[in-house]
Length: 485
Image 1 (cartoon, rainbow, N blue to C red):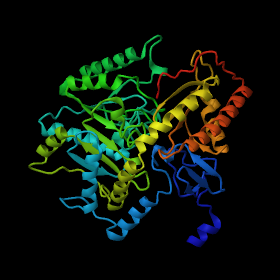
Image 2: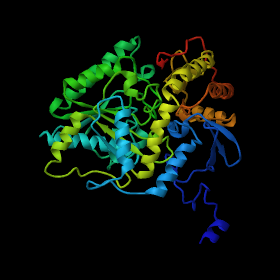
Image 3: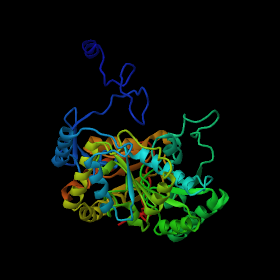
Image 4: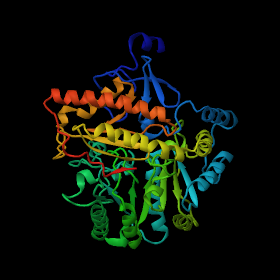
């Protein structure tokens, strides 16, 4: 079989006969895949054609400690030799899992009583919501189940996490007859997106926008049945896959005040924002709130192996304990707290401290954000620059004054993404938003390389836009209110 396959079929071909189904792509695309073969010098990957590319996205916002961290490789290898697998069901476990939970509890800057480990971010968010439901049942509140979630949010792709996400692209095609949305009925209460550039009213100040959004949270809670019906709000501190959208200053404290008024829990989705991406250890710190549950994945192992987690506050843990007193908590995963993942995560926590990642992000952030602002301010094709720490995005527009977007058919974001790759830089196009989140171990030299390659890609994109009849003026100032330095 192997001989026949290798002689007749290119297993990486993007047509019928190729067994690999890519994520977030067409089942049978028309172009061959981009194949990467190794990482180099912490911030680079090399493709099969030996092109050396600076990974400006850190995988999927996730390889925070960079490639080639030998200590992580050794941690995995040592654990595989010692105990490659054991589960954590039925009051059983393994030493590295217990050690990691204790270390995580000390690492997290909020009150934490319990940590549940999962396989990744989607199931961490799914688990957090189920735990909220279990908690309310234990307290005798079986109707307190509705979840507040925001437009443009991304919380994963399980049925529950995807339903909480506010992106039509991950709902389309999965719903019941006549519906695009996933079939969760009225369990999800949708909130507006806190992106000032696109959703603030004309002339509305940042503070007024934040206040209006907080009032919307209260209005939606009341309309959904109030404290008796609404259980939790799930939110990313800074929205990632929806377009790297930093909230207006003051937004999160205002929102949490409303949640507390109605006894609604806050689930902070830190899958992207956590482990130093925004500067502090977690995004909730950056925006001044204390979550009741916090989900993590990606950078928990610097993405060397899959793992996710849910940190549970004492208040919620007490309710869960009450519910399982005369029964059990019927939830968990075969690979939750997998020993190899736990060993790598434990080593990551040590490296985050030893490499002073928070300090490095604090130093590198202004170099990247100010550098990009300088490159974009006179480029009329860029309407907004936004971000915080080492996650940033620019939004391409055909008119700065009106903020009019390019026609989707132009594919301007994809053009710039491809141009950046041609110049040696990996970025992500989210429509016409160009996103970056390099490894947090990046140096000043690495930032300079990003800026150099980005400038080349931006100039190439401007020339391409002009050839298509778009030459936006830069007379209107670049919008940078959500460039949170």
